[in-house]
Amino acid sequence: MSSASHAPAAFTQALPSYLNPDHLGPWGTYLQQVDRVTPYLGSLARWVDTLKRPKRSLIVDVPIHLDDGTVAHFEGYRVQHNTSRGPGKGGVRFHQDVTLSEVMALAAWMSIKNAAVNVPYGGAKGGIRVDPRQLSRGELERVTRRYTSEIGIIIGPTKDIPAPDVNTNEQVMAWMMDTYSMNEGATATGVVTGKPIDLGGSLGRRDATGRGVFTVGVEAARRIGLEVMWAAWPRACSPRPVPAWWRCKTMAAPFTARPASTCPRCRPTWQPTAPWPASPAASPWTATPSGTRPATSSSPPRWKARSPPPTPAAFRPAW
Image 1: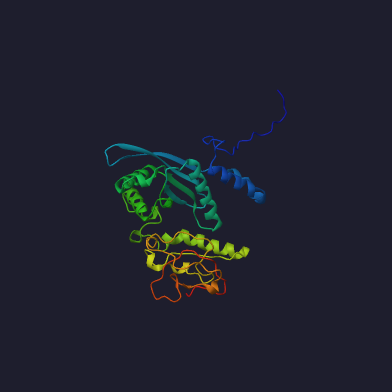
Image 2: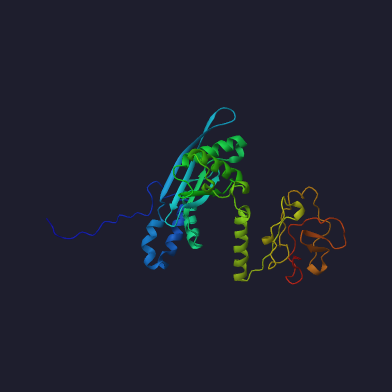
């Protein structure tokens, strides 16, 4: 027998066997991002293969009775990418085009985001291939509760904590919390975030995602020297007051360069009453916190979502 030593076999493989290498979808985008930063990881690069494989992927069947008495089946997912830093954390989306590849990528990005901001959570994500617009409220509740029961074996306050995402909201989270609590035999408010305030939800959760986009966008524009124009629905047309963080003192008046649709509540009566001027100094419109109005008119303001950009020094929000 030969005494020659043999090189150790490579036991790692980046691509899971259950994915199609020709159609990786969003997971392929995530893998490209990991490969792009690997040269900068130094000694930590040995963990790259761990990042390229989700810890756990659960695919479930979600059967429900429809209102017409028939039984429909939907495909559900819950992926836990990494839980080394703590319980998995990530939303649940209801959409007819959700795929396992998409949910895997979103779970992986949750791992990265939680680690980047140093919160003690891992990355997870969930979804159901269903168009919620085609379901009644009762059918949507049954889908949510059955899905929660099916993934209940891997979620929990210390294991994996779902949250709202695309086409899911406080009501969906309340159904999930209630279903999980019934199955566990005890109230478990910590099993989901994004719950109604009355069930232990957090103030500001509803606006958190939009606020984050706003903050990051403003900061990014500031760093590259880009002047930011902004637009918002007027107070009278908003179902609730404009939050204080939106009334940013560092931003220019609420105008942008190209026309856009107005508030849906205003659109039936909105009409331009004067041509747009060539310069702000010649404008018959004045900027107000709730929109624009003719400078010589005492009538209620007619909201104009966008108009020619004024000079930065000439127009500033009054708040």
